[in-house]
Structure formats: structure tokens, C-alpha cells
Amino acid sequence: MSLEMAREITPHLVKLPDGISEFSFAGLYLFRYRYNYRVAMSGDLLVISGEREGKTFFITPCCSTGMDIIRELFASHDYWKLISPAFIEKNSVEMEKAGLIPVEDRDNFDYLYLRTDLASLSGKKFHKKRNHVNAFEHTYPDFSVRMLDASTIPDALIILEEWVSHEDHPENTDYQAAKEVLLHLEHFGMCGLVLYVANRPVAWTLAEFVADGTSVAVHFEKARIDIRGSYQYINYAFARSLPETVEFINREQDLGDEGMRQAKMTYRPSGFVKKYRVDKT
Image (cartoon, rainbow, N blue to C red; front, side):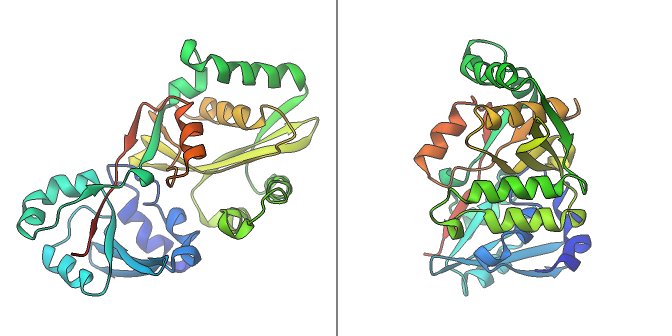
């Protein structure tokens, strides 16, 4: 997978109906080394192969793939992952005939939030989050927010380095992917913000539009841990910056991490983007 593939792959991904966070060029390219992604294309058929923890898998992002091809892929892969609800709906009869029974992959469900909820934090259920935002505004009245673009990338990199300095195992985080996207931001159709306190950068976020523009998937969010409320405020500010045409904010999956799951649930998701998998029998 290379940057040159963006023009060829992106049109196949941008209009996919489910809004699966991984189904974007950035979501695939930036994690190509972690999963050893390889791409095969033939007409409208897009197949992505990868490896994780000694097992091989394949992904079929687009909504139609013949079961003969799936059987071929199972000959050289251990499992089929990130199967979308739209794919299952369109191919359920053929899958059943082939004996392919998809199961929910809860650890990879994307968390969906209403943009209006995160932009207002109104009501009792968001009382604690609103308190964090109010405390940030009260403690740091000289804060400001700027677009994440070529002029603010150096500031985002400063925050990233500060963030990773507190990580015991940076190799197990998204540090490399976050650094790469900042260094090559012009190649990705992404939008984001940088948060400042007294002109000192303290947080940033970066996302891209999915589901034909009705959702945004937040791929990266980093902040200084010594600035209370910086994570909550960048989340709030970003939601407020989005156009009204965006209905949902997709804050990706928890990967089975219990602490991350609890943190994502505190923002009261309105639902999930479900994903399924089929293991070789």
C-alpha cells in the first residue's frame, strides 16, 4: 500500500454506507505496517489482506463480492474481518448457502455519537463532561482554537511528543501513525483542530468524513495530561466546528480494552457501527 494508491482506492471507500472507521484510505494506509496490509483490485472489487498475531485475515470493504472469491481467499487466510452490515444484508443468502456464518466482533464496534450531543453537552447525562469543559474555560480563559493545517502542524507535533513521553510502550500505540499523518497531512482529506492555552499548544484532533459525509471518524486525539480538561475541551470544540450536515461522530473502537470501553461509554453513545467476522472452519 502506497500513497499513490489514494486516488484509486478512495472512490471505492468514500461512499460506503456503514461508515466503518477503518474503511478510508487514511485508516488503512497509516496502519499498513502494523497489519502488513496488501491490496488487490479488479474493477470494483477491492480486497485487503493483512496479518496480526501470527494469523492472516482479509477484508472486503465494498458491498458485493462473489462467494467463489471468498472461498478462494479462505484458502490462504485464517479469517475474514470487518464485514459490514450492508455487505451481510446484500449477500446473506449466498453466505448462508456457503456455510459462512458471521459473528459480531464487539471489540471492533465503532462508537457513534450524535454531533448535537457532543457539541452541546446538555442534560443530566453530560453533567460531568460539561463540568470539565466549564472548568477548562474558567482555569484557562486565555485559550484559543485553530484549524489543524500546515501552519499548526509543528504545534501538533510538540503535543504528540509530549504525549508519547508518558507511554511505557510507544510501539504499541498509534504514535507512528499519528506522526506520519501530521508529516504528510496534504495527502489526506482530513480536518482537525489545535487547542492552545496562552498560545501554548495543548491538544489536537484529526478526523475525516465517512458514510458519504454524514459522519466523521475521529482517527487521532492527543492532549497534554497536565492540562486539566484538555481532552474534553478538544472533543467539545471539534464537535461544535462541524457542519450541521454531519449527524454522527464516530470515535472508533475500544479493541477490547476495558478502560477504553468505559471511557467511550461515558460519552453516552447513540449506537454502534457493528462489524462482523468469519473464521476459517
